Amino acid sequence: MTPPSWQPTCLCTGPGSLRDGQVHLWFAPLAVQRPWMEAYAAVLTPRESRQASRLAGGVVRERFTVGRGMLRLLLGSYLGLEPRAVEFTSPPGGKPIVAPSPRSRAVAFSLSHSGEACLAAFRASDDIGVDMEWVRDLQDCEDIAARWFPPAERRSFFTARPDERPRRFLLCWTQVEARAKADGSGLGGILARADRSWSWRVRDVGAPGNYVASLAFRPPPVRLARRSVRPASCCFESEAR
Image (cartoon, rainbow, N blue to C red; front, side, top):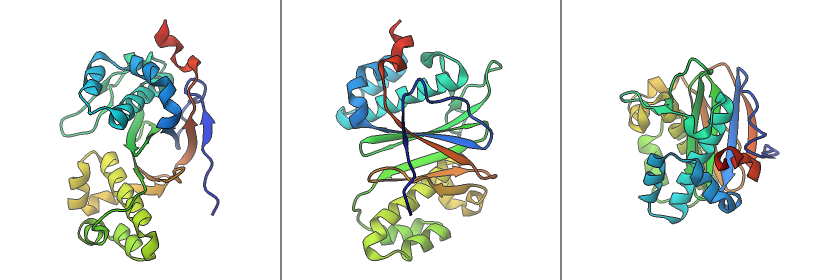
């Protein structure tokens, strides 16, 4: 099967409008974002900047800065707001969402990062969850899958050839995590209440490079628009003024 194409796109010209039944996916490899790290950092709020400064540095801090900065830039474009004007709220026991506003349509989002990349997903109104993993060898895959995976993911893992199992394990893991993010109950909630997870559809989004990623969503089926972030100075002009 031919892998899906991820269109290189500038943050300021690419978002457009979110139509019903459509999900926009944005993949951001850190190698391409590093020349713009200071510009991403300038988009963060003072609280987010303090949070970034407390991180260990290196790739961990870069992923946070790019992920949160990209989230603000894109949500600002979808909502017609300045990036730092985007407000988030976290209902008790729930996941972060964009604070409701009578001036703009609701936009659901989900953010994931692994290795040296970030992945963000956006949908008008209805909840979604996205999760991504960098493919690598792991210990105890069989034990974890047998004990914790829901039935569908368990079957998918154990029917894979031994040489395919590291990648298949991580793909199945992203399916479980994506449901947990969409549901808002956390990983423990999905694993403990497998029946609740069936309200979410899940699909492999065909992540680029050595990554796997899954999207969880409610029916009906969604159409994916895949974009790979290629920043330019125009993306950050409003923050420079």
